[in-house]
Image (cartoon, rainbow, N blue to C red; front, side, top):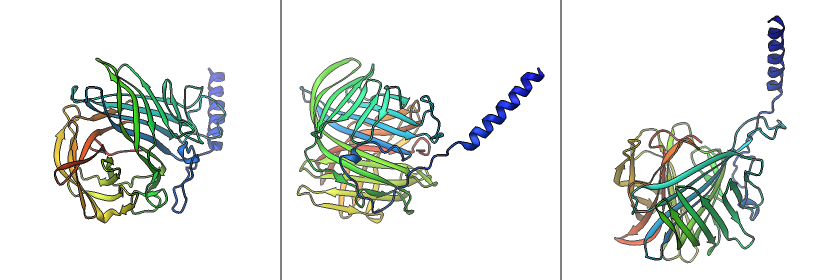
Length: 364
């Protein structure tokens, strides 16, 4: 027993010395003035804490039924010792969400996966978009077309996303502020009006051919939300005339769906390609319609009027219930849904609305 005790003490001392020598990671900062560079910035940025590639879109089936879809790949740097040589050390995590909005179901059909990077099973590679999580894939070909493959018991997606417009760089050259402090920011660009072709299916519905349009966001950061932030509301919409709308607000932890904005920004690109940026004072989200989740009890403003300067955009959901519970992967519950965009009583676009922090404050 004494020998075992001595051995435990020695092992504890060795472990303590090892931990003392562990290299604590330093996450790369987001700084103004850094210009994005392509194709490099299509790929992963593993030195930053958090990153996501986020595709949302509307597609139509052969019988003219409208469906919404979402595919998101996340990369997260864990903060563990970067000097650990073990292949089992989870330095990077790869997480993915996929969802289908179908009014015939009345709720969101979705699935999620997560794994540590490595062993040829999961990766987010630098250089260009190349993402893998088991048999879920998102790859950017040399011609710019994305190939997306999602296979699960809940839904299947086999899609091609072809660019039709230039990249839309958000913020100042890709530096997108998320709060009053300069470090509260991300690098951020979008690819609106991706032409979608392929197939989509779900449990109870065999895959069918679909066509439509999508929006891709790619964002990476090390610090985004200030301590008193609850979450955000975000919309990205492909406008029918070829324009594009992105708007978001960061909300404080008041729990209110009213005037609780901490920060906001919007980017509008018109049909001629002219880009207008709107700062926090020119962006508001005013709820029009709310929906209460029977599962979480959260109340979401699923319909809203968004102000970007002198313009007003009315957001109408494809269906009220588009809540996604990702507590098995990212730990969050959020509303992620297909919406139409109206002005002066007529439809002017289709897009997606994301709302986080309504069940509990968002943590990245």
